[in-house]
Amino acid sequence: MDKDLLLIENLRGYYKGIFGVVRAVDGVSLRVREGEKVGVAGESGCGKSSFAQLITGTTMPLLHYEGGAVRVNGYDIWKISPEVLRKEVKCKLISYVPQAMLNSLNPVKKIKEFIADMLRERTGCRYSVKNARKVAAQHFERLGLDANVLDLYPHELSGGMVQRSIIAISTIASPQLLIMDEPTSALDVSSQKKVIKMMIDIQRKGVIKSLVCIAHDLSALNQLCDRIVIMYAGKFVESGEGDDVTGNPLHPYTKALMGSLLPLEKETKYKSLSSIPGVVPDLRYPSLGCRFYDRCGRRMKICKVEDPPEIIKGKRIVKCWIYKKGGL
Amino acid sequence: MNELLEIENLTKLYTSGYVWTEKVVAVDNVSLSIKKSEIFCLVGGSGSGKTTIGNIILGLIKPTSGKIILNGRDIYSYNRKAYWKKVQAVFQDPYSSFNFFYTISKPLNDAFNLLEDVPSKEEKKKIIKTAFEKIGMNPDEIMGRYPHQLSGGQMQRILIARSFILHPHLLIADELTSMIDASTRVAVLNELLRLKEEEELSVLFITHDLAQAYYIGDRIAIMEKGKIVESGLVEEVIFSPKHSYTKSLIASVPPLHGRWKL
Image (cartoon, rainbow over the protein chains, first blue to last red):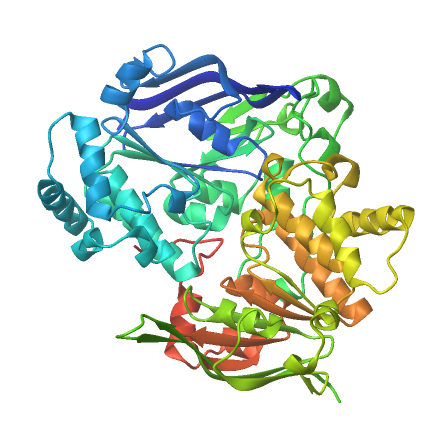
């Protein structure tokens, strides 16, 4: 349990272009132990997806790795050559399911043909479609999916089924770590529940060891993950056990985020809910101090000029000046 | 007359194939009515025909049978342009709603062409600015950008701002907030509630999120496979559901506190 599967140290990744330098991910550290499910939550534009791209080494154009370390089982993702990363690390150690899941499959190929392509590429063996189907069918059935899906084209499947198939495909080589970007945001509630159930099952059955899931829906994330990390403007502001973070948010941003959620409870209709005022700051010119300063209801003088310290108590980490004196 | 929109026995069959035709019933004998200044929620899983109803009301798809009446007149008796001034829509996928070759100022300015007396450039700017402020965005940051430079949530909010420009009677909000993140979702919903109160806007709110439907809606209809299985006031339907499908839908909403036993 105590072995670190993924170790991220002071990771930085910037977007560079004619618009300037956007500090999308600016010094984040995270440890994911074996058997842990970690969720990363935050608003859009907070750098969640950039974070996912950086820890898998699949940065899209304009996003550049700037510094820090991402270690997966001894491999430092940004120090090894892309060829090693592609052949030895991806799919075998880590697997990444990107956000636009419906675009991930090849529209002119059946699922089994797609899997055959993938297996050929990853293993270097000459898989026939028939053999690939055999391997895939076994894996699909292990995960409780209908193997007949393999004979269909992606457009014949519903969104939830596509998402579950993609999760199954990406875990076909039993990676130790699965990284998912917004797995349920495009699905309706009943398929969302099925996807969450499937991801929990995958881990229970030992197909994957750990999971990093990125989402903006805290309530769904809490159903899936043990630990939740809240990201704001390129930095982690709070982390802790899922129920602690949702039940007793400490950072003003987490509080605001929780306050804007719509739970299906009787009082919801009569409460005047409010969204977080303002927008995520322009990350081209980040302030020296706390990045939530402009939108924070409890700001102090020091918040503007100095970066807040990390205050640690047990498993809880909060990056805020409020707790400097009294502790958590 | 209180009813803004009435739908009677609406049915839509999708047919595919030429020789051996295959029929799919997307909407099956649906009747509903939307009152003035009311938010009517249409809730169902994916593939239940919610979007088809929205598209039929907009006149984008012709129904197989059934009648749709807006303000006492059949919608096909209206001039298209006049009809779309009364009925506006925001769709679920903002990525396909913009032309990627134009900056987003163009669709906003084009919206004015539906009006009879097109305002001057200065006035247009002013109206766009107030529309943006309503949804909590800064127009100076956004205008002149291309769609690919914006996030999905931002695009969706721009489309909502665009529909506010025309002051429609009925807004069809098809999965309006599914691509906006939680922190700004409430602002958009509150905006719809405000428009409902102040401008007597009626909204057909199509969603799969029961919590949102409960927060915003007056009446609700639950759809399954093209049929309305349960309808009524939101509180009654959500807190004392009768149909088994409604019950299973409610059970799938992730609770904020406490965990599912999976």
